[in-house]
Length: 215
Image 1 (spheres, rainbow, N blue to C red):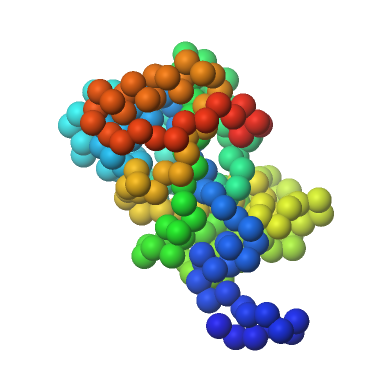
Image 2 (image 1 turned 135 degrees about the horizontal axis):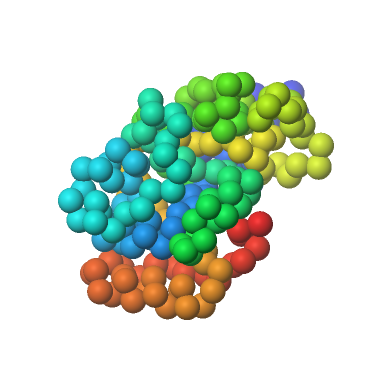
């Protein structure tokens, strides 16, 4: 790492950059069927991977058709907070489903094939890049996002990307061992997830009732 003007060190990897900003979790929201499938396969899977799993074909119910088909083999993650706008739209269009959020260890940021986006991956203004420069681009002073709107760092915490719709695109699958916690809205959802773990032979996940995560 090279020295900064204040005597510190410039981060040389995405994980080092994340730690310097206080990022302690990546987030991925999904339906109860996504949670069930993750427990069954011991992994969070991309849309392309889901199509190759015979068991999961029968229980999955993908939310929203992918509008970025070139990235169908990548899993979309958020940094620190979920994309609340997209989540609210998902809940509105799929009222029969309940939801959970996986909190994932940021250590995966340094894995091969990870790509970082400045805003939602489908927006025309998106910039994508790998490596520490790609990660840092998520925290630029200004980011162009939806319909040309400009987000700035004003009032944004150090661990929060400039545009809340920024994404970490992770290839193929994330082993469930990287899941730090599962956040849910209701105690009944917690009990059901733990029952699935027992029934499907998965180690118990740390499940927390955390409604604030969903806002």
